[in-house]
Amino acid sequence: MELRKIQRTRGGTFFVTLPKEWALRNGLTKGSVVYTSITSNGRLIIDPRYDLRHKPLSITIRPSPYLGREIIGKYLLGYDTIRISAKDRITIEQRERVKGTVSKLIGLEIIEEDHANIIIQCLLQPGALPPEKILRREYLISSSMLRDSMTAILQGDAQLARSVIARDNEVDRLYFLVVRILRTIIQNPSLSEKLEVSPIDCLDYRLTASLVESVGDQASQIAEHAIELEGIGLPQRVITALRSLHGIVNEAYEDAVTAFFSRSISLAESVRDREEKTKALCEEAESSCAGLSPEAYQRVVSVISLIGRVYDHSVDISDLTIPRRGKGIIQESEGEPSLL
Image (cartoon, rainbow, N blue to C red; front, side, top):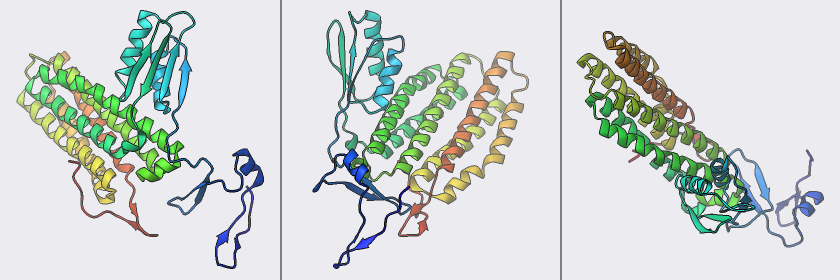
């Protein structure tokens, strides 16, 4: 750490000199333009990489047993062009793996290929996709999956359950897109300013997106149990208990995400306040399973456990709610805006 004294011109302007080694290392000379920004905690950031335009990133990778994972990794790191290049030729299996991976990632397209090369390009512009908008879409899909998976359980609707499982792919695609954009924002201060998303916001969005994606996974697993329970009629006592449990958890999930976006501390606290009631309903639902066949008992108890995890994720999301900051004062937003 180096201390520097603030100086002032006759006109009243404050200034401080920059470290010479730092300036030379970043190629700064007289007349160079740097990017300055003030963080929420009052710090001043000086960034020598001032450029309002997004600089395309390219990378070349070799085919390997982990080809799909490598493509996803480069996508999440913000690469715009990914070239798969083989020494001899790319096999049919490798091409299918590339196509399958590309289909899971929003904005990626194969634009060119020959016997030894495949070029993939991301056609999305980061500045045109606010992370909040994508996260809202991810939540809406996962929320509908949760409702429909429980309807499939209660009504024995295997077809509806299969549609829930199919929607899980879209939640995953949106999750990957959120992570890509957030990483791009962190590396580009000008984009952060344009989208009004701070580095701390990026961390909160990343954690929330992961929890929302996990809720989609829970809903998909509930749907799988619904398919296996097809033709096995559940007693009314079990249906009633599951409906009550789902009702409070679904409401907690919606309130948690609403609190996160609206920055409402009171609404966030109300999610945690439902813990005792949720535990009691879980125990009640498990007790109602007495007398079921071993297979049905095991599956219904698993469903109850999955619903409980959704509540836990809702609490985690609500814990990420931070108050909105005004001019030197922490303020809670007025009202509880709807996600819809």
